[in-house]
Image (cartoon, rainbow, N blue to C red; front, side):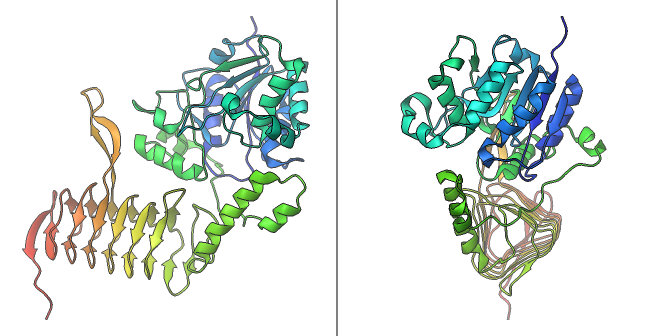
Length: 436
């Protein structure tokens, strides 16, 4: 029996993650063709994938669509494994997991589609679907969350169009097949076939997942990632269109307008201090007299992960701060520092080059995997603290006001105020008297 010709297709309107590297390496391993098509589309962006699939489906027996925020983690599983669950189907899709009570009947983020006239007709009907009609018809008890996009149009066609209601047209699999989320990975990065990041800060979530399992940002293997050439890396986005512009676009839709409004509100809140900021994660070159962010500084924010500056602050090149975090007035964060989320930095704090403030750790696991469940233990650095070059502050530590941490120290427990600590692990060396 001849093996099916399988293509993997993805698209984005801007490169936000290194998922395309991940997809390409998986395709090479199994002899598939990977197409990362960034050509412009004719229609609304939430229907772009439908246009792309119609464009490439005639070249293959099966196409696996994968969003640019999904990464294949267990490369030992071939796509034929999922095709075998519905070999005569035109569509093989997954349900979504329930997250905070939100779910969807199917997910169009990642799915298999077979090259049949029936499947092509289905996609063309999806493109012609009136989403206002879908919204009026939609029953959240039956179909879950309404996203106002291609996914909802697919649900509508599957239930309302008799052409696609034959038994077996759709094979619907549980979310564990190829729609798992980061929280489902409890026993290692290869526990499931695929991890799908959803939300605004896709790159930040992928980076956090990589740090959790000591993987590169592509969520592949370090050696193969380093050997690649010509990799397109994420870059700052162009400024978002004004909400007024979106309102003038006939098919912009409610969801697009709401998203633009949220982005503009966030930008207005930040523009007073960082007028050049134009994305949730990007490189800065800002000096407005109050906040100085040198070239190469990276700030990672997102929903519920705000970085709050309480006054003047200076961050030197290649410093990284992950939200949520609070940075006090007069703080100085030198080059190559890393400040993880859930850190509070007081006023007048100075961090030397290469300081690491860590809040992520793991519970003690069984003998076959000592790094157990991930936990976060907040760190507080008091007012006036000076931490020397290359020092590391471990999760859960409080450094008291006016303390000094010597260069290279590893702080494993709380530091009393107005003391000098040094060594590995850091120990109190002396009490600091008040300056005359």
